[in-house]
Length: 411
Image 1 (cartoon, helix red, strand yellow):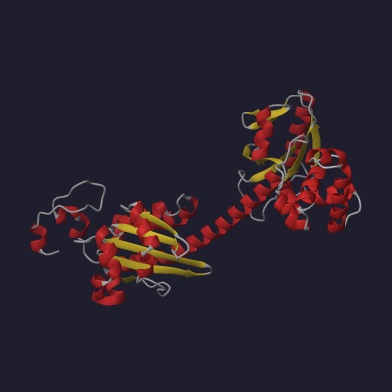
Image 2 (cartoon, one colour; image 1 turned 60 degrees about the horizontal axis):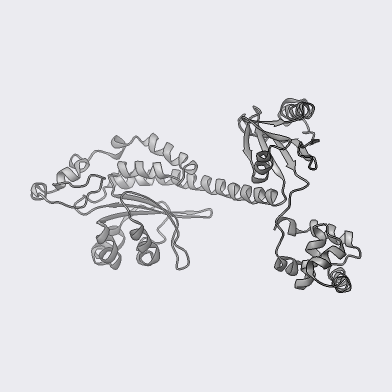
């Protein structure tokens, strides 16, 4: 930075959160002696934050902030999914940003971004990529200049299903990115790529878990999961509903309790055997499934309870891993009914036929269903014969079984 610039007394928009700064030197103290990035943020701390990133929400927020400090940058942005004409993409930003600025990039200026399809592992500045034309480019003149971005450093991370972009900026008045800055980015890129791959795997497993958990909920199965210490670590929506009624079974602290002392001892024994018994998964056993019923003081039908060990993974080591699943079933719970449209598409039924089929699946007799549909019994019988023909069954019980065993139950 020249002596002439050092002596200038100007007021500009700050990089940090301080509201006003009065000189370029005071605004950029880190640039005066040009310390290496590793002196500002230790490399092992940076790498550690990158690998902890998949567990954060939003992911890598801490790592990007540390990179911003190490590179003395205005912004560090990780574009997990680049914007397209159909999607806004996903961007994780550090530094001073506005929703308006992010939307402007996602909706318009992403198409003008010169950093596209960079070579894997390559770290380049805007000037290195397009020369001095950078300052005359539409994205600089119409967008970057307005948000006080003068220097831009970019790298792409791709391969194995990953397509991400790393962008680092510095404001007007700051020095350009040095060879040391680019070397730091090149050093971190392989770690960031591995961490993104881990995040992709975790995200896949979480999506799969949510899918299966949703199916269990829609089947009206309550699920209570215990860890190896016998502590409840998760309950699904249906289990919470059953336990909240406190009708025969409830939560006592972080444990399941049953109103009947005899049934309570039986349940605790089943859970204990599933956790530590000779046939438990932790002891390499086959994991025997046990079941019981729980009486309800209200006089309603008994709850069904099933206890089963959760098999150990080949390399499982944590005692906080899911170890035992307790399933709860309320025989009087009413499932949300599938739409007529779904039933019609699945079996090729008319609207009236679909309505009749759903009523029969709910347990109504043909006469009761006809009354609810406000049609004559003979009309209902005609619809039923048509349903039999389309579904390939010959009896009403077979029809009900077909409907309950179809994908309708998880719709």
